[in-house]
Length: 249
Image 1 (spheres, rainbow, N blue to C red):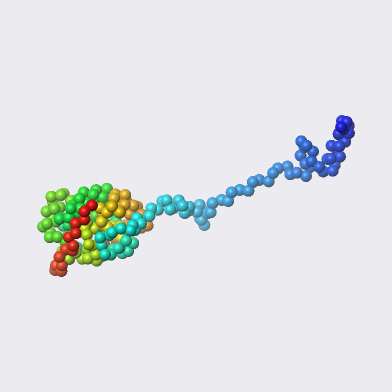
Image 2 (cartoon, one colour):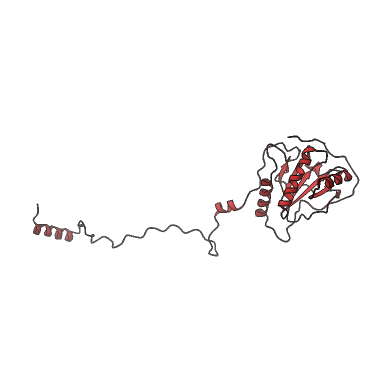
């Protein structure tokens, strides 16, 4: 055991030798610890603004409905493809303005039970999304037959007839009702039998198409719907309506 004078001499010797002493800072130790490295700053664009977060963008831009494997009741699957040329023989309502709007075309007939059942839903879609959607019913029946139905049921969305069923033939519709939903870019975004158990047409789907269309094709004063040009003719009747297949749930 060291006596107190000897202990003091040992401490002095340690300091002179450069060794740290318990409770005292080392003479070679820095006064302060180096600052912790800073986290990398977010990327910036040339204008100095923060770069866009892709994940955030993905949430903000809704996607169009995916093409579900199902029975389309049509020979041509147009989903993701250009819509057929819009052709009708005569408008039974005023011709709707389709510029800058999503267009829902319903191939239907007054004798078709599921078609009649769908009418109130289509009216609801038209009323709820009137600023972004145009609903059009197209029948190949006689004018007086469809007119009587419109009056009796109080149908308020747009209606037209085409005795030659030109669009219907291009799509290859084999059963009705058959619906196409077309974006402002002229691409078919939904197609099929609305009452399908595999993918029923719902308000949520209509909204999804509209929201995705707005994100993909921002509205401007000059926005138009190229796939549904106005075409109304009084040409001769070239064929009767296609298959009168009545879908049943």
